[in-house]
Length: 264
Length: 90
Image 1 (cartoon, rainbow over the protein chains, first blue to last red):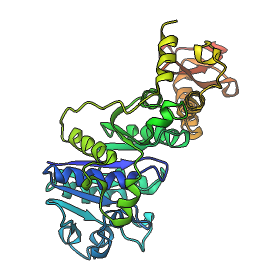
Image 2: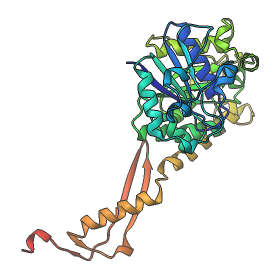
Image 3: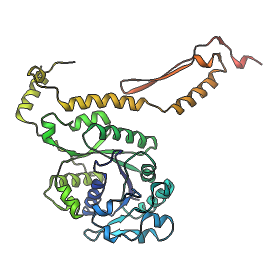
Image 4: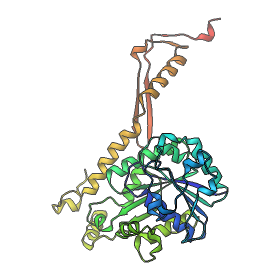
């Protein structure tokens, strides 16, 4: 039986869809069978980020309305074995779907695929409830800024209420330089506030923009720091134990000051 | 507040530290903010049970949530005027 994991954040624009696309592709590259489900009804984007927009024929709404079979609605990603996409309807809105309907879809997918990753819309309303209805586990994506972290905390509370476990944190768009000069919270700061397990830190990487432009997930570019971070997270999702590298590269001056502070 | 070497050097406090302090405050508040409907329901149900044993006026009851460290404490004040045991009333 496969796992259903909802990828969510509360706040928009922190990298849910990018993370879903890259983690799904990375898991498929590791030999897992994966289906990506876009739960952002009315504002779908996972198809275009994946570069599969021209191949979408049916959506989850067609499956719910029994216009087509679930298997027929899945778009196969031809670049890697075992990766499928279930697109969201663009002409409906979130209230047209019931949480139980999404749960039924996830329960079916779970029997065939190792991983079902559900890309949640921003917000804490119906779209989020639909996206999390069929999930066993959650990945909460945040960036190291006050608004994203506050919203992440809210989402974590809601996920805990419905007993989704584990809830793993991805810190996205992390900048070692900004952390080094004290302008950005580091991973310890974020974890101290949110108090859940960290599954990975993705550094700020301009490659994300170009890969999204092209519709080719970043993980295909082996050398990029973002790709490496997503590959490591995917390995952790498969149960491999890989330490989380400390991405902070503090300047010498800051290190000396820290030494003094610690030893006072 | 503890004065660190960094501050002795005359640098401005790091904005990341400010962010963390502000977040901690606001998130504590967010987490304690149980919605009013829930508190009202809890109030009614507690009052129903306690009314079996005490006499009190509903208007004098106060209920609050507090945080201490990592846990939350529900503080409920039910000032009563009379104790009565329903089980003795047969």
